[in-house]
Length: 167
Image (cartoon, rainbow, N blue to C red; front, side, top):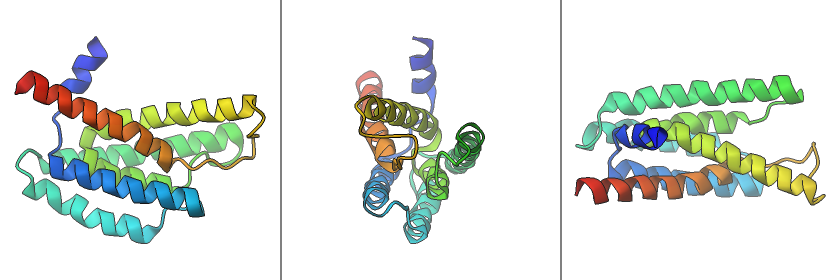
């Protein structure tokens, strides 16, 4: 209950930020699955509305977006370094790290629970694939689809709960 109250007390970004962030995630997930990378052009293009919308959106304080983006960048970069130490190779690509920054602009502080849920989904998928013999330690697994799978239900549930409780 405490965690739910904590998450729900975080200010929600405006709808324009959420929708744009989900669109960026859909394209990033597709390119990550099909080519194994998240293109810098996509991230640069997504950065522009991510940097501008917080100033336009009445529901959003710009410092929420930029603070969350910096925090997400540090969080995912530490996750990448941890993967390098534990598995002797980076657990995440640099595209995922840059995507974390961009998604922080759109999802604000909600990006941290989304990344945590995506990591849990990815771990469950990897363990299941290993147990079924379809994956091994050297298998590549794109992370952006797990971000998409975690972000959509999270954002919808948070938005619906806020509408339900606050009118």
